Length: 118
Length: 117
Image 1 (tube, helix red, strand yellow):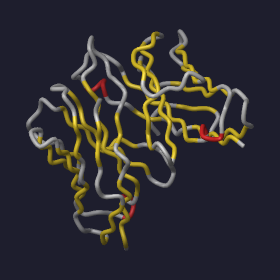
Image 2 (cartoon, rainbow over the protein chains, first blue to last red):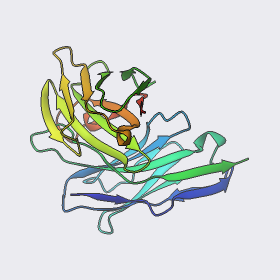
Image 3 (cartoon, rainbow over the protein chains, first blue to last red):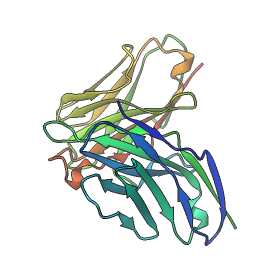
Image 4 (cartoon, chains in turn red, purple):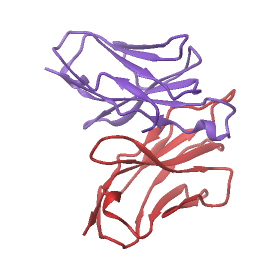
């Protein structure tokens, strides 16, 4: 079974600053995917960024980027030029490669509550 | 808007009752997933269906069951409800195609808030 650990229950930064959220995972799988989801006060789960484990290049999506260290089983999220709208719970998630194709259930960490201060 | 719809938005019921939650996936998606989010357990994967067939099972209780219909919508049935079943229930969908493609990404619906009194 996989486990995902987010060691920062809450973080607070000033608007326009850069912030990094930590995530580590434990798995015996060699093929898998990693995700960051955002959950604002509306409770909607919104995909932020995705990383395939077989890709060495770190994923980026506009102001969001990851630092994927496969050997260390670490997958941190960096948010640059943080904005008030980035205030949300951020969940790191793991998905193993499903045998026979298709996807599998996500294993989530407990989340980090990120607060962007004006 | 993810394109995944869930009904109802809110549901209030009593212990011992049975409820049905409904989910319609994004157009073109063949896989549907159900998740439970509670204060105690966090976000937990319950079950996955792919094109009408059960594909993967997570921490789903025996009192809970699901199915996916020919039009690909899915229903999650919760029976003999207990206070601890109060939670936000999410449905997610993905294309469910060849692993390694962008089709593996899951998109979430807005959730159904279940309150058991």
